[in-house]
Length: 178
Length: 114
Image 1 (spheres, helix red, strand yellow):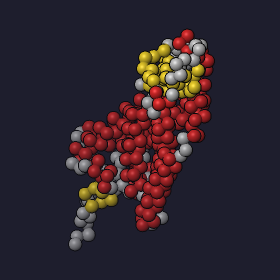
Image 2 (cartoon, each protein chain N blue to C red; image 1 turned 90 degrees about the vertical axis):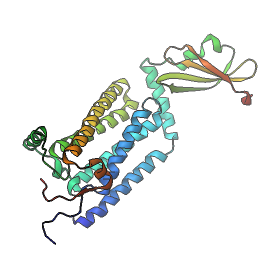
Image 3 (tube, chains in turn cyan, yellow; image 1 turned 45 degrees about the horizontal axis):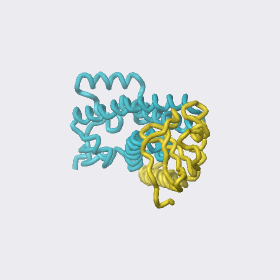
Image 4 (cartoon, rainbow over the protein chains, first blue to last red; image 1 turned 90 degrees about the horizontal axis):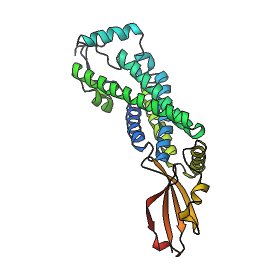
């Protein structure tokens, strides 16, 4: 066998990253549907989201290759060159998060943590926290929309199903990765 | 850390997700009873709901005994749900808009509680 031949499948996302991602998606959808309707479940979802994000932060430091922040948090130069290649319709291929996606992951983690924390603080602080909580929840919805759009555009341009990759953890092998 | 250790550690983290979910979603709801009480107090202090004492002064409730009072959120609106022992000895549920103190339609008789 040729040593340079790509493996049939390439492992990208470990089991924790996938369980984390879809647990967060489920909690997020449920949190929106229970808001102002079912406080007890809504609050428990908030605490669960905080637990998920805490574990993800730890895993970002010690986790598998593509799960680590060091793998996908890139400087502005790399983000610019990636976005340039995207605008030309021929984006660089990255096995894990691309440089723009890396910042989206951070933005989502920070915004969702702030949303959950401000929600937890409503109990003790009243209306100001409630307004902040609602504002952050709306901001997170915008980020989620951009995130999902990015996944769809990237899947289309690279002809790879990134949703499936987040489910199975694998991508078809490639010879060259940036 | 070697790759095999990390992939095993990934499953440990999956376990931590399951444990935190189990703890958070099956915990006793008693702990939140006082929270609800605190919330009602905060809402009252903010002037967003009327105190229960004012609701109890409503003419519709005079001469009747209020057995139980709950503050509920119904379709985004805060509502006092009162169980009232009527003059005829029946237990009825009465609803009052918590913000305005106005009685709401939808009271019903619970005959089995007689």
